[in-house]
Length: 272
Image (cartoon, rainbow, N blue to C red; front, side):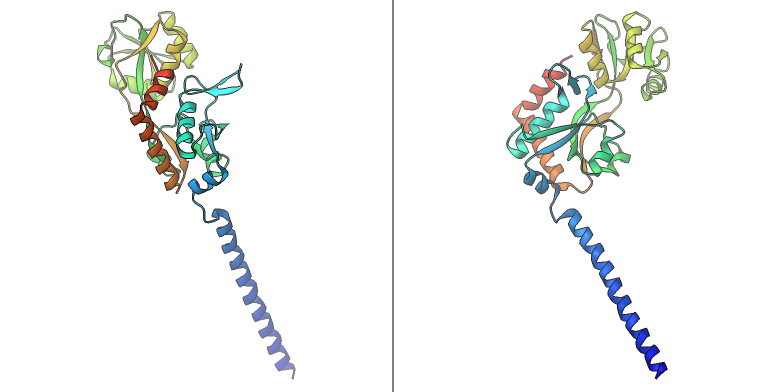
């Protein structure tokens, strides 16, 4: 009798364990399905009827907060509005959230923003974390000189040329590789570097052309010359697996370029 009672107790506990494990497994499956809801990124955007873009608020010409209007303005902002207008039919269906180079991917992955349009260079490492659109701005290293300078490109840099760069930057390394005879003068930051160029301490200043455009807009005595000599293409980033949203962005970019709207925005901000 005692033996049968122990057997019954053992079987009862075994059955309870099976049900408990099944319940745990079902809970995990339910959690997974509730996370994606079966909707694609583009479907979710169309349902809420708004696109939340992560943008820079401190990058002149691309994304800069205007203190008089308390609105962010720039090339990236106008491109984001135009893309939104094509995807949702109304450019006003946008929301902008400030991002930095450090926060933009985490904010995208935790769902705070739908896309990133913030002077973000497409790289192989970043492709592992996000999906990129086609290139929307061809960035790269260039030269800023005083108007009328005999330097019209990197080929004009000689042992007599003094080129200003920022300490520890890739631009400093690149110029030494591309123009090994030139003298490189390094400064702590871009503000100091541009001040040095204006004071005549160097013949040219080198860094990413998007930064140089901002400097040229501050002082029209200076201009970019020679095009770009490194390749840093900017792309619009979406959460990994957002194929439909990326396709919609690419289709919108193609439409903007074919209609002339892209050139209109480009000339408005990058006309130097």
